[in-house]
Image (cartoon, rainbow, N blue to C red; front, side, top):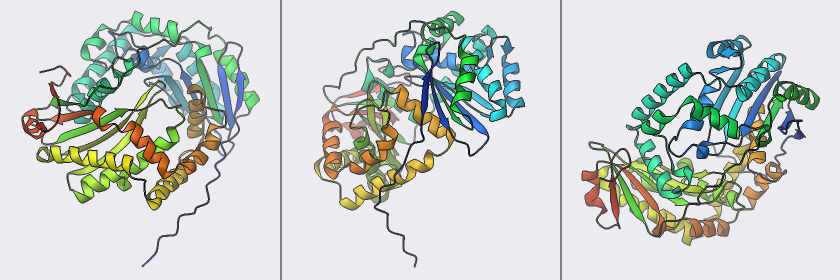
Length: 448
C-alpha cells in the first residue's frame, strides 16, 4: 500500500513579482508587472464605484453600466467592438462588485494597442445606446425571474439584509428597481464616478514598463479627471438577538440553511487568521461542517462556510441543504461546531494541514499574468501594504490554535446569528418551536 508523502514543514517562500508604479498625467495609477514567458499581456482596471453606489431606488444600475460599456463606445457599435476583439483573438469584459467596477482582458502583445484603444473608448466614451439598454433590461428581468427558483440566491439575498442593513451592501436589484433605470441614470453614474484619479490599471505580461506607460498615456490621456466622492454609507449594526428568517418556498423538498455573523473588512489585521479558521470550519471536504453534517450525521450532501468580505465590512457565512425533517438537528449541528471552534484549541495536525493547504495552493493559483495583475490591483484598491503578498504566506503560517479559537469566540456569536431557511414553511415551522423569534417571508422577502 502506498503511503502519502509527509507534508513539508518548510514554509514556501513565495516572492511576488516586482511591481512598477506610475501616476499618469491625468491621475490614473498604472501598475506594471513584467512576465516574459508568453507573448501576451493581461490588463485589469479597477475603479472606485460599485453596486453600493446604486441610486437607492435603482439597484442594479452600476451592474447595468458595466454590461453596457462593451455594447457601444465612441464611434463603434456593439458588433464593431465585438468583431475588433474577435479579429485579434483577444478578450475584453466588464463587471461590477459591491465595491468596484472592473475591466479586464487579454491580448497578444502585437495586438495590445487594439485592446487598450477599445478599453479607453469604453471607459471614457460609453454610448449607453437606448436599444442596448432595453436589451440588457430584458435580460436582467428574465434572470431575476429565474433566480426566484434558486434557494441559494433567496438565502443569500435575505442574509445580506440581515447582516448589513442599512448599508447598501444589504440591497439587491428587483424588477421594480431595474424598470426605473434610464439612460440618464447610467450617464450620471459615469459622470460622477468614472474618473482616472479613482482608477488603477494593472498590466502584466510580455511588456516593459516604458512600453506600458507610453500606451496607457496614449489611450487614456483623454480621460478627464473629475472630483468624485466615494460616498459615505450608514454602518450596519449587529442584531440584538438571534432571529430566524424562513423564506417560504411551497413544495420544496430540501431546506437551504444559511447562518451568518458579521465579520470585518478585507483589510482587517485578523484577515489571515479568519482564512485559517474558515478552512478548518468549512473549507471543503476536510472542513468540520462537512465531516460532521454529512459524514457523521448524514443530514446533507455537503456543508461549508465562506468569508464574504468587502471594503467596509463583511460576513462569515455557513450553509447546507438538508431534508426538512432534520432541520432542527442540522441547526444544532452547526451550533455544536461553532461552539467547539470557539471553546477548544484546534488539534495540531488539523491546524497544520489547514495551513499547509493554504500555503501550498496559493502560489499555484497565482502564477499566471491574469492572477498576478488581479493581486496587484487588489493590494492597491484595498489599501494593503506594498509588501502584502510577500508577507501573506508568512502570516498564514504564523496563525496559532489560540488565534483560531479567539477569532471564533469573538465572531461566531451564537446569540447574534442571522439564520435564513429557504423551504416549505409548513414543513419547517414545527421544527423551529424550540428556537426564538421566527419571521416567515415570501419569495420577494416580504413578511407574510
